[in-house]
Length: 321
Ligand SMILES: [Zn+2]
Image (cartoon, rainbow, N blue to C red; front, top):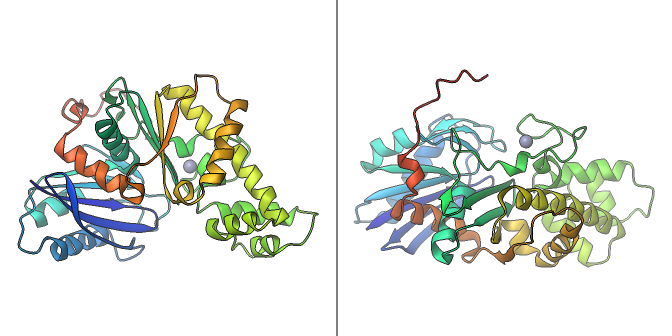
């Protein structure tokens, strides 16, 4: 079976072709940030046509870094992208003439890791442009009423804290995600009374992005060290909260910040002793690195989570919109 898989991330859009469960071809571009509601679906379709050549696509799976409506296959909110909300399943099913499954990116990765590792209680967690997770509990993929039962990046870690890209306050993602680090560092720089280092100067301009921060930290820059220690605490508190809620046997870590900075991750794991209640799970890194989400969504198409076929119709309970 030939499966088209797409990973619509905060920074990159990756599209791949899987044949009999194996990744055979892949392209990666920057995720479009303008051009209207159909732009992203069109871009996925264009890349898919370039990749497939003469082959037919039997089914497709699209994973998105954002809030989705899993029944309709629409993106409700992609916090780090100005296009924000857009349809995916309908326009892509029309163009591809194949069934399309839309899932949150970390949910897809969690399901993929569950299948490839055979572990029934597993959390996949990513520290990247955003912060997200997916959870499999006792072999069941957790979805919730719309498909967003895992929005851990929006756990409030500081109820008086700064505004998040989603509009909420003091969220983990607003402090420690790749997109928040330059803003968070700028605030820290304006109150810093120590040595005026290169990291401090870069932070004051709002330009201390994760690669620069971690490289200056390794060079011994004391301001970079201060920021990294804060990030260690914030992430230790966030990850511990996730473990306390889902109680996994295994925590699989992915995303660019994790995969490029394992020394930083080791510090976070040590610091978790301060915050964790449940027994510490076994921790591992995403097996397929930056392709974890692509592989996860392809596996979700191949071995569709049962829960997708048992979703009840929108609830009659009156909730607030
Ligand atoms: Zn938020």
